[in-house]
Image 1 (tube, rainbow, N blue to C red):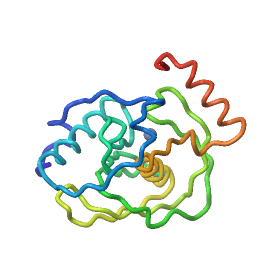
Image 2 (cartoon, rainbow, N blue to C red):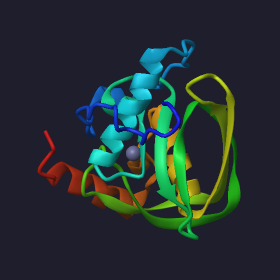
Image 3 (cartoon, protein in one colour):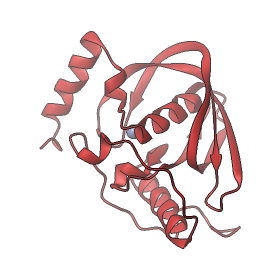
Length: 179
Ligand SMILES: [Zn+2]
């Protein structure tokens, strides 16, 4: 993306993969080619995330099994965090754990109290291959853990246990988008 362009403004909104789609359960592959195809993918991710009014989106949610996600997410102090990361590694996820409401663009309308660490650091690169380090706290730390999980084929409902899990999965089965 060139300086001065709005993220996603040149991207295409792609169909969202929903719970039950095999693309969401597979581990994504490392990206080894930093070309215009990757730049287009990142633009499409931004466009699709904004169209769906989300705060983060991973490539496998639009059916591309590669390790990249985008985010535009506030932290608990309402500071905006905007960007993308390629081949992220989860460097740190610790601090206190917080159980808070969490949803996912691949399960529209479903929310559940999900336990996450309050502090997260991920390292990877940008779409040109330059190193990137992202430090998040609060809701943004939750977002980074959620998107990193996607690349490992894990959904937030996989993190739930007991009654919370049963309730969320029952709501998903009864959702209008369920197949
Ligand atoms: Zn998600």
